[in-house]
Length: 125
Image (cartoon, rainbow, N blue to C red):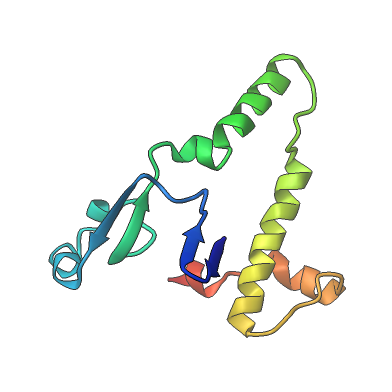
């Protein structure tokens, strides 16, 4: 969220880290073939935020804890396989819409069928 006013500006970004690194073109080109050098980067050059605890930031630890607790206590966990399947369909539908450069109707049976074997341009490399 950003705000501008007469004589002031502010920005609030919960994904912004206390450490950021700027990688210029020359530095990026020197490691162009070394993807490991830029692991977890959001870009290959420019300003990149370094998240010190990405697993907690995105909730992965909570998901893991819930799943382990449910398994150990023979209970259903919050994010079951049906939920994960629907989430995967939504992500794939987003890629499909982007690849086709149009809005798609997820209630259309033909779209649902197409999603089963859809492979995005990103996944194709």
